[in-house]
Length: 71
Image (cartoon, rainbow, N blue to C red; front, side, top):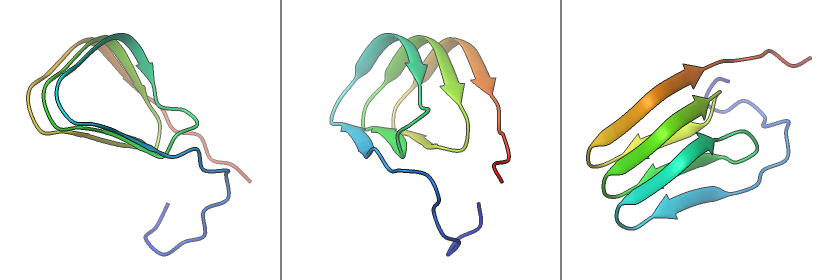
């Protein structure tokens, strides 16, 4: 996606955590992104083209990044 390009999938919001987040599995499919203003500890993160911002430490056992072009 290029800045200024039209967004063609339905938006489901941006998740903002004001503090630390400890969670098992994070799959960002279907949301606009995740912002954690503290530390993020998780078992696995599944990223596609969504925003992920962590202000503190990030500790994850597995990270998967995948993209798919949609016509």
